[in-house]
Image (cartoon, rainbow, N blue to C red; front, side):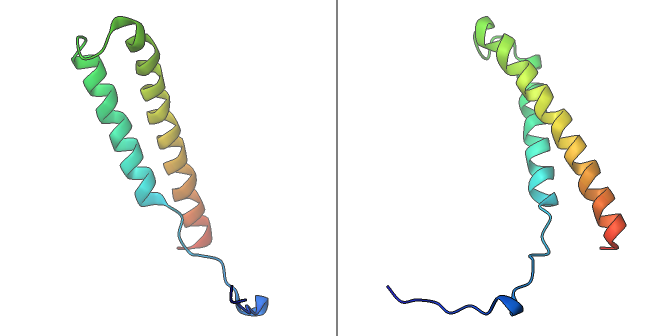
Length: 78
């Protein structure tokens, strides 16, 4: 295996914050929540009791993450 020589002085952090991925994930969780609530026969009642709160928490955590990233962008001037 060839050894790669990297000068640590020239390394810079990546300027990506993942906000687009967070938007997509939050939208998918919102869609899943809508489907589970609007189509009660989509899955069995026993698993519905588990998945509805999971999708709601996914929405909440996604919105919190969006707020944090937007606030960080504003603070850094990006």
